[in-house]
Image (cartoon, rainbow, N blue to C red; front, side, top):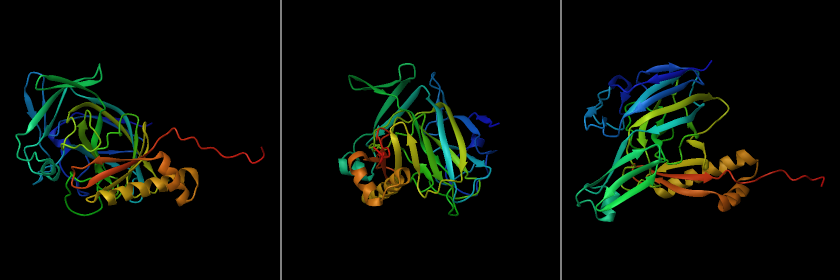
Length: 319
């Protein structure tokens, strides 16, 4: 019988970078589930009384990245296979925040706000009403909650310690707002055991994540099921979400990221429907959306979405 392993955040469970040399915090079998909470991107959790609890990475990295729980070693996972991550449950905690301006990066420089005072929006999260609220001057702003994890990744095959900031072929900081509850993410496995890690709760985000943050929030509960798939041969992440099938592209050049996402989608359409590449491109042109996932993680992201409402059936030649 599959098991569910439950974890409560502690320093011993957290790390801030990727490495295929990190020791797993838990060995699980294919088909088992993991359940955990997450802290916020600032490596802490703020109680409702204002008390701030700080956490640290057990790996003592020189350069910290996102706080991630893991890695999890999945028995039977080998390079060339695929890790299926079923996102069963996501529940944001009571608060979140995001910022804009106040520092130099390419998008702030282009918008002319690098030298402006940093603005922070503090959000109150109401899971019952499914909204997050904040104030901007005399305005009260409410947005729908669309919780997802920004970081879901397996360890890369390359040696050394790797930043969590750029997404890569084995996942990581994908920051795709479509990876909501009920989604299935597929990641290439590059090392034995997969060494899966996750974190970076987002309560809501627009495509692009244009200020550099979503509503960065701790999560009260995350439940994922990890399954090794020997029948899937992929080289980039793909997902099956409520919005549709998704393929991804990551590159410093947005055009190259677009081509990667589109190539992945064309290949998926061929796989699903058994048609030629040019036929798949023609079909994609009328029903696939290309979206900018994020522009702020060094490697820009593009995702292609094939909606589930496309109706395709074989022609009955006897009629």
